[in-house]
Amino acid sequence: MNNRDRLSTAFAALADPTRRDILTRLRNGSLTVSDLAGHYSISRPAVSQHLAVLEKAGLVTRDRRAQWNDCTLETASLDEAAAWIEQQRAEWIEKFDLLDEHLRSRREHDHAPHDPNEGEQQ
Image 1 (cartoon, helix red, strand yellow):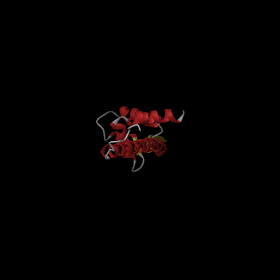
Image 2: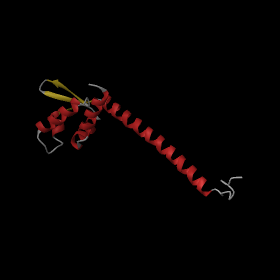
Image 3: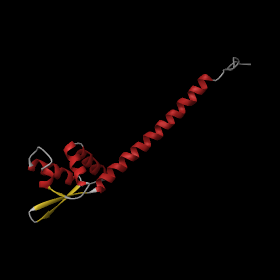
Image 4: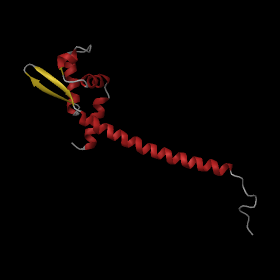
């Protein structure tokens, strides 16, 4: 899967508030699917479906331990998404700075005293 596809998958996974909340809960360490399911008013299979989406996006890993599935936050995909967002932000800041510079130059030009003889032919 190329970088753009991974980003698309990560952003699609992050679009759901339940999935974002799951990631927030996993920041402090691994949890079982049952532990996670206890925080939501949806079924355990629905939580598992959310985890499958997060896993496909590379945001979570699930390790089977006896009868339990431990879920762990994976930061590489989040780091990749954050880097893409930061790159976009930096490019827009640069464009806005250039626009601001241009507008400031135009205002200074428009408010400068004009020579009445400017533009006359001799």
